[in-house]
Image (cartoon, rainbow, N blue to C red; front, side, top):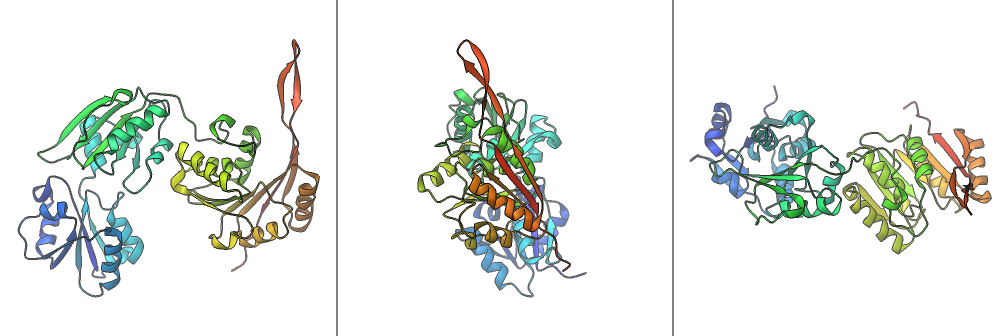
Length: 403
C-alpha cells in the first residue's frame, strides 16, 4: 500500500475529546499539522509543528500541496473532510492514492440528529464558497433545507432572501457550535427574523413553507426580466428538453438574450454549468440578474459577442444557438467546438436563419422540425386563437470518433 503524502483528519467543535482513538493516535504521530486557528486550538498538546493557514487559505493550500514530496503532512478539516471539505480539494489535486481520510461526524449529521430530520430526504446547500442565491435551487414547499453558513451574518441574509421569494413563513433554526459545550439552537420565522448575529460557526435549517417549485423547464415568462428577446415558455421547454441536460454538463447559449435557456438548463441539475454569449451590455447585466433571482448564478458565466468570444470558453457538451445564425462562421465554430457525442440545438424564426438550418441539416443530418403554438385571446366579446411566429428547430448530435 502506498504511504499517503497527506493525512486529513476531521475534527468537530467538541475538539480533541470527540476524536476517535485512531485519529488521536494519528495526530500524535504527526510532525507537521496544518489547520485554521480555531481547529488548531482544539488539539491536545502535541510534539508536532502547528501551521496556521494564511489568508486566502486556498492559495496557501496550493503551495503546501505543490511543495510536499516525501514527508507525510497532516491537515485538519471540520467534521467530514469529504463533505464540502478540504479533503475533497486535496484528493482532486493529488489523487486518492496519496491521501488518507479520517472523518469525524459531519455538521449536517449533527444538525439532523438535533432536529429529528431524516438526512436522506433533506436538501443540503453551502454558501461557504457559493453565492447566497444558490439556496433558491433547494427551496420548495414542505422541503427541509440545511444550509452551511459562511459566517454569523448568514441566518439573517437567508431569512431576507426567503421572504423576498415567497417563503417568509418558513421556520428557521440556527444551530451553533454543534457538538461543543457552547452548542445553541435558536428558532424563528423568516419574515419576522430579528435575532442578533450569533456564533460564526453555524448551520441554518429551513422548514420551507411557500409555493411548490419545480426544476422542470418551462418557467413562466414573467420570471425573466427581458426586453422582448426571450425564448417563450412553451418553446423554451421544448428547447431545453431537446438539449437533453445531464449532470456535470456544460452548455453554450449563443445569442442568449435574457439568458432563459441557460438558466433553465442550470436549474435541471446543480452540477450543470453554462456560458451565455451576448453582445449587448445591458442584456449581459440582465442575464446575470435573472440568474441571481432564480438561484443559479454560481453556475453561469456571461461573455460577450459570438463568434469572437467562443475561443475563450472551454469546449461544451451542448450548444444552443438562439441568435446570430446568419453571422458568417458562427455555426461552423460552434460545431467544431462541440465535444464528440455532444448535441447542438438551434432555433430560427426568419427565412434567412431557417435556410442556414436547412443547409446544416443536409450536411450533417439530425432532426429538423417546425412548430407553432397559438394562444387563446379575447376578440371583442368572444375568444380567438392568436398565432405566434413559427419556430424551425434543428437538433444534431456530433458523432463520436473512434479514438
